[in-house]
Image (cartoon, rainbow, N blue to C red):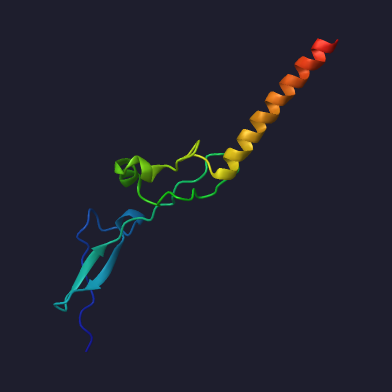
Length: 113
C-alpha cells in the first residue's frame, strides 16, 4: 500500500504562485514535510541598450541579498564595473577617443583657413 502523499502548505497562502512554491521532502523519520523554494534570480545584466549579457564575476542573488552583500561582490574592479560588460566599456572608450580626435581635426582645419 502507498502511504498518504498529501501535504498541507504552511506558507502565507494556499495558491500555487511563483513566490509560494513548495517541494515535498521525506524526513529521516519517514514523514513527508514541505520545503519552501525561493525564486531564482535572473542575475545582473549589462545596462547598455541592446546588450543583454549577464555580467561575469557577479553572482546571481536576490535583490535583498545583493543589497546586503559586500561591495566587492556587487561589482568588478573596472570602470562601470557593476553596470556594463567589458566589451561595452571598450566601445565607449573608443567612441569617446574618436570624438575627441574629430574635435582636434576640426580645430586644425579651422585654424588653416
